[in-house]
Length: 584
Image (cartoon, rainbow, N blue to C red; front, side):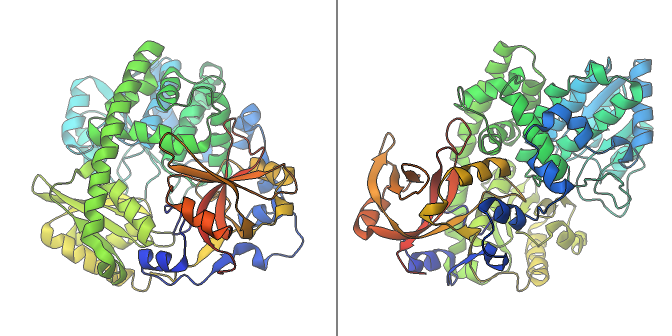
């Protein structure tokens, strides 16, 4: 994602420079290094590193759901797969009580539901536990483990957590429970002494795809158990792959290889036969009658699942995904809708406060930005840090005080591994963990200042000149069915397969109009050789109306925009930046 994806269209160069404290010299077309004359489809594939061969065949497979098992790796090659499946098989056959211990985000609750649903389909006695995001935090904890042991469980299977829980695994053993870890987070130097640590991020991993999310790992582990037990026919794969798709997008997994296959297969199932909980979420999100896309999973379904943990308790989200009754699912989905609405209101207030704290001078003079308020909810810090990081194109720490300790979330930018950086100051932290670009830690007030100083030194020189990158420049002759077909093949879009960004020169603004209830959105038509017209849409920028009317001819940067049926026919574009014609 380029640094300005989060911004709307910008009218002139000065406004852009003032907003971001950077010098934007021009746009740069990424396909400049490619041979001239290549078809648009070929250019876009090569820009995404998808060259001719088996990888391209997998990438472009139109219906992976029909032969998904052949497209995915052998789950027996996951780290500790033999030990994990042997212990789980024994628990299922002997009627032991199994507890799936999940995480509180969308990836964690989908991973939990995958394991709990799949194991129940195999005949297992399964319960699940989701920790409270603020009161318990990430991973297993002593109080939860004692509660699980008191409930009679003898096997705990984690979902999207556990790789760093060394002491907690020891306690579980003392309480008479074995632990199988299913996770994808960064691997510490010392692994827990669990029965198995099934994590493709391990250096000794032989599984062919190592970028699975927590939901993807859960799905792979369940496949391994099913193969071992010969229960493949009893597991409703369609019920589970749609959950893997939701978790993969919600956790911003790279949409290449197996993640892409899981997502495409999951979307096909969601649009044909969604689970009751997924169907209820679709309805609450206003998507009835629409083709659900990866964008809907990321921006409508995922946030509603996350709202449960951020505003109340993630158990509600997991209950929804486990639900088999549509009426009950609808009730739970409406509860999430209310929580998500409240979450949006609180988050916007926090971001407004954070923006006031930073100011232009502060944002331009640090390699890492830090915002802190004792009034903030710990559960929403990640959203604040993420928004600020996108705006300023630099790592951001958002922190608050909770029960005498400083809780912080960090969001980084591509190429800067925040977890590795935190390892260098672990003596300042009472706990930390996460991914390369998203992490959390706990420290003291003095420790927070020391952490920022450390990260500023580690990331010295990381702030880059702001250059607006586009995939390629398009002419009116390019705007036709060939481009629509190429976009359909490249979708679904997301991390590592971003929506293409196109640049246009000297566009004549035709039939400019306002639309929406309050006239908050704009659209105009641009020339096209392949369709009667092509529409350019500017969402939420009514103030551009007079400017576009006055200019008449503009240079623009835009992304493709789907129709309600999920296709790109006819093609439309979402305006991101607009400049006076020939300004670049």
